[in-house]
Amino acid sequence: MLMEEVFTRLRKFQEILTERVQIEREIHEVPKSLNAQEELLARVKKTYLERNAEFEETTARVSDLRNRLAEAEAAREKAEKQMDVISTQREYEALNKEIRDATDLEQNLRKELQREERALTEAEAELRKSEAMIQLQEGEVIEKRQKIEQETSGMRQSVERLRADELDATDGLDADVIFKFERIIRSKQGVGIVPVRGYVCTGCSMILPAHFVNEVRQGNKIIFCPYCSRVLQYEERLDGSDDDLVAEIESGSLADLDDFSEEGEDDSYDEGDDDAEKDEGEEHDE
Image (cartoon, rainbow, N blue to C red):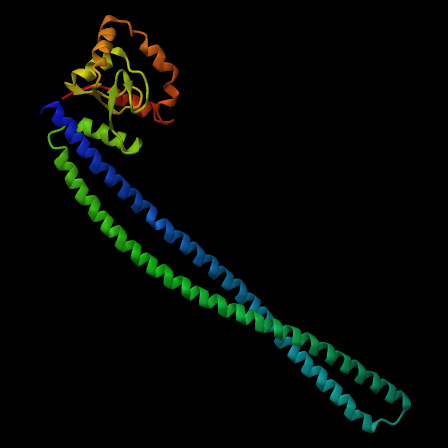
């Protein structure tokens, strides 16, 4: 297979693979919106439980106050009835004090009961509001989940179609090259083939060693950039200055290019890719 055809196939593979990687990322990202909505639903349910506990506590206090108020009213009424049968001043004073105490207690209980009944009404309103919010959020979560399932189903079908297209595009290419090229596409934002202009890799802007410039220019095998691991393809300059450059390379005047390139190597590729991508700088005969 001619190298020009190899590069054409790799570019086609790059295009298809980039699209597939993007879709796969979307498949991974789409459920996050559902997760956020489910977290909101969980918070609303937690709020509902807290409000329900408050409602039950207030209900219990109201019930207790009503019982105590009924007892205070009964005690006052009993004491008032006894006023008709007392015979001494001492009995009158004691009974009168009992009536006043029962009346004061009754009034205090009634005021407290009124406050608690208002709190109970407010707690019940908040509880109903939480119930309505839960119903609304549950409906939205169900709708969102169904929509995501439909979207991801369509995306997975697209992924499978693209995988089939990838097989067609890479038919006849070396499996090792395909494997490395896919890793490059995933780690280099979808750009796996870059031109060499002069003696600079346009992918990482690093100065390439002299023998790389010659070998890439010859174009008879796949060569990976030793710095960014991308596949290199020579790009001829329109002004013909490449011939002068190659002459300089062959004469050895650019023999110290390796030293220049090492100075800027830290900026040429992503951190953490060093070990994995150095292995990908191997040369592969087509």
